[in-house]
Image (cartoon, rainbow, N blue to C red; front, side):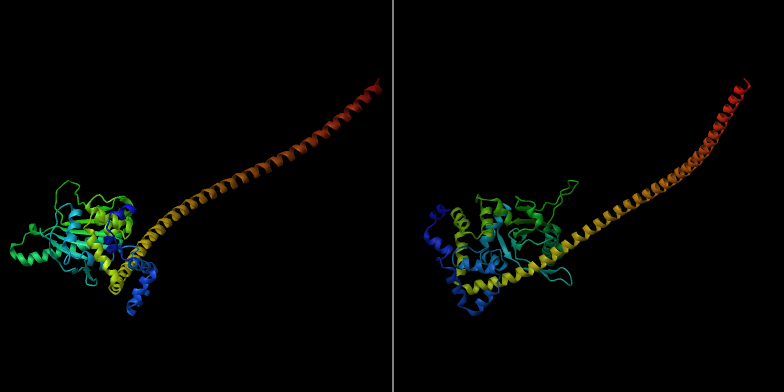
Length: 388
């Protein structure tokens, strides 16, 4: 860290990190314009702290907010920046031919127009849309399909009108959708440590069929967690997009000095808090809108999940109830069988008792007979003795 500082001239450090103001001095600059200060007070406390730390020169400024990203990466003003990033990402030399309108077709009668962050046409006539998302939205595949469908239909309509009867589908060029996510959504977090996710369209037969859709998702949070060193130009760009830490900024400029110009442009916002706060205000409004959409998606997903869980639990409970009913029926049958056996035993016991009573009566009768026999024997013996 210290060695990185030593590798850069002090003037460069000053350009990048500022003159070293206190947070109080930074707040004083914002207060110079009443309207600017009012907007600042409406920001979340963590965003206020980031702004003050940036103006004070304690950290850089992330450009993951839409307005900052479009300003720094503007293909109209700085085409070489976007060309450099795309060339590193696509591993091919990329040259921008023209910048296209960001607003696309309306997907449905009751839906808004698709708004793309940066849409350009390359020298080979292929199209590229670069999206920067503060928070990776749910249903990324479905959303991306809408974006690609819009761009491909836009190209089709334009070529059809231009070539008329000479139109052929072979004239259609690929559409690249590049989605950068500062905080990626669950499907991409589960794929860590992979941070670049490239769509592959394959057929189970092995047939080679061309697809115009070329989609790449880039998880900046996973990149920041997984990559410690800057070993190539692509990693340099992803570091630029993902970090506002002074140590990362200095390491990046040491490895790739051309980024110094971008950081100097970002540093200029320190001298104009009014523009900075205005852009932040616009960016937060977009972020709030996206957050609401995310919350709706999140709640819908949670509702679907809970509904599925309740349905599964009800099926399980019904199965258990049926099992319990079957067991109760079995127990009732056993109890009836036991009752029948007990009744049979009671009958047998009554029969035995009757037999025992009969035996007792016979025994009494036998006993009387024995007594009579004994008496008669005694009398006979007396008579015998008398005769003698």
